[in-house]
Length: 180
Image (cartoon, rainbow, N blue to C red):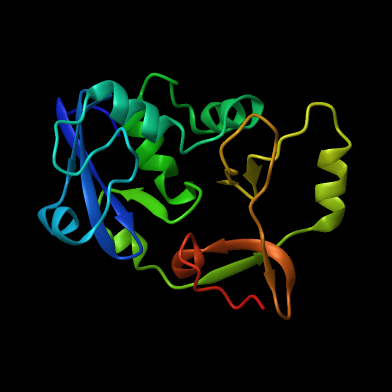
């Protein structure tokens, strides 16, 4: 994902383009809300005001805090072979795994994938939880991040007929799940 001097990713809430994050090389350089979001939306943080200059530091802190800290994040970066300093690659690869309603992608088409569900193997989960060197970040070749924080967490959904599992596509961070 690296190479170009100037790159950008879109920050979306559902299908609505909220902001564009501009990078110089691999580092976050500028955070810009879209004109429509400035008219109809709200500041995502007190440190990311709608109508004032947003500092690089504020943008970096906000975006970095979208992801977990500690062991789980380190294992995800190791699996993906991404440096902690390559913000563009981290956000580009893991932007659909961000907690909450926000997603960061190169194009809106990435958000328009069909809903998919993968059942969680509870025996495998128990095995990993009982292992001191557990890896909850990678399941079946896909990085699964958790809510921000240091403690290991795993975001799963309760499907009405298939039990606990992982949501992808249209079910990720949208609230459009079949959960009761």
